[in-house]
Length: 248
Image (cartoon, rainbow, N blue to C red; front, side, top):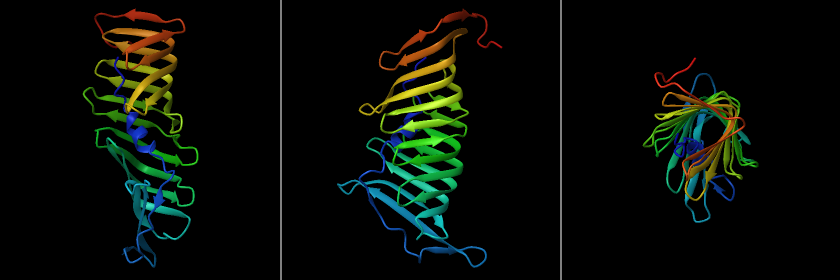
């Protein structure tokens, strides 16, 4: 089963840009405000990060009742990251942005989409700037619309480590494309920062691979993307069902 187009590239590109060494743009001026019910007013909030060359790398926009506070609570969030090969857009109903730490929290209808056709959906997402990690304890669905669409789902938690270039999916993990399915307890995807591709995926715990009517069982399976090779360890077993593709 070919997994080098796994949709983990969606968040790897988005979050591996990081926020270190960026200059911040001041929030939008108070005159950009819209009336809401009662005496409260919602003001437009916009914060951007730039490279030393002046190129914009990311921006966060939304509406807030208080854009002066250190932690800005936002609604109608649109966050964008500009990469070398693709751009990413995150939308969420609400969340918060810490201007001191550059930490961000997004929740309710969180959707991340990329210009390369990838998409991720979850209920909540946190960006930990100091640790260079993205974490969520909610169910996650990630999908790639490459030549061979690939979908990863898990019940969570999920974590992407920017510094070490890997992502971990936990609990009821399922990786699926037109060639087959992989089920496991935990899957770790390792990212090659040079090729912008997933270089290796390690599936652990109750690993089951279904392809063309056969099932493979093992304790661990390692997929090497460049070689398109799968290595099974831990008492591997193969069961072939030529007349059916699903087994209860």
